[in-house]
Length: 117
Length: 117
Image (cartoon, rainbow over the protein chains, first blue to last red):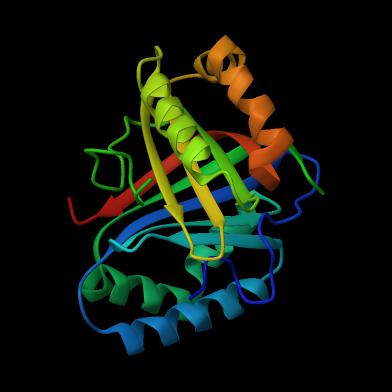
């Protein structure tokens, strides 16, 4: 994957807060790149099809550390995506073999400001 | 900067929620790398000295897109850091010359889970 979701230019344009952000920080386990990249691409596409999806930002360093932030309209949209059957299977594989370590943080975005748009 | 804060291995270990996350997504303007890198290093060090600082995660892609997440104990700690005089000067320079675009999102972390620790 590139540093931003395909076709996207970071940062994502999000609505007036409140909305939700899911921060996924991970360190990849070595190996399995082809399989992992395919699954990551599929999950990006699948997430984008879900109700309440607002966008995704992603960056990764050369040392395997990566930060992905997914934005959602509501806590309910976050919950539904977490429970999506195909996503659950990917989560299981991630836990079993793709990630050395990971943390998922579910956040309510309270304020937003920026520049350069 | 490398993909994680100096001496840190991502992801950061954070306390039981609630706590705060500030997501800073940006695209660097071309040029000024030496000055920018020095300022970014200084801001990482300065942030880490503030009361309520919990840790920082950072990753950047080859295309200049980057995601930095800074974790804080409270909304009050976030506010104080935003108003820190030296940080305000860096924010001004960032706006004026270092970033093409950026968004800052202040978030209340409600839930956290992970694996591999």
